[in-house]
Length: 71
Image 1 (cartoon, rainbow, N blue to C red):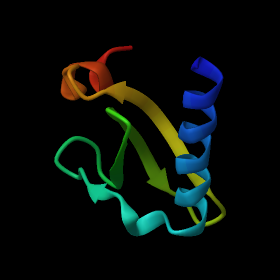
Image 2: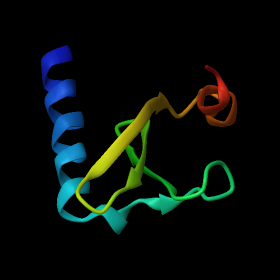
Image 3: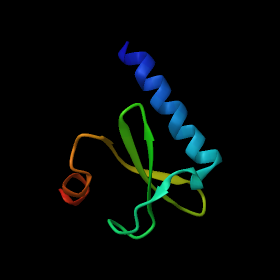
Image 4: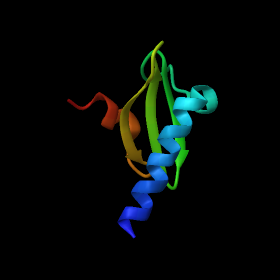
């Protein structure tokens, strides 16, 4: 079950590599930050010239602002 979830999450991440602008802009949190929601999780990422960098994967019930600002 967990393996299937991780495979689907990985597929969503690979989609970002092909179409990085499909996520929603979250510039209000971090300049250049975007999020794609998948299966109850937000994949937070930034678009770089050579790739997409995933910053965090956060469950949608969590406080994303707190999670992204935590060190």
